[in-house]
Image (cartoon, rainbow, N blue to C red; front, side, top):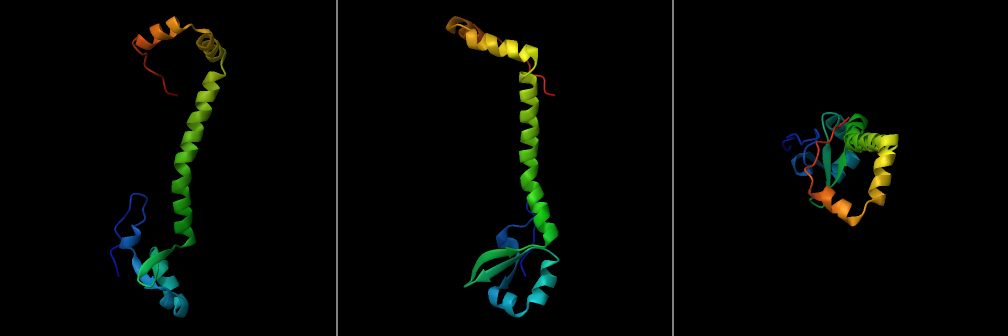
Length: 118
């Protein structure tokens, strides 16, 4: 069986997974299920790795790693929107849209202020 070196999300590359053939999966499912309990398995057909078998726990871990960045971005977006909906944010937005091209040019060359992150 192949080396199951860790990938950044805790999963190995498909090329590094232990492999079973589709025929072995079909004929010895219980044995393959025991192997899959120890880590993801690549299933090959015609010498090509086409599928990966994961336990339910491994699948949930994978799904969580996919959702975490999106949840973080959504929270950051919500904070930005909340700051924009303050009286100060509304005044700044109104000032921006009523600014002349000369005002915008002066603002563009001003030294930027550090942005406070919440």
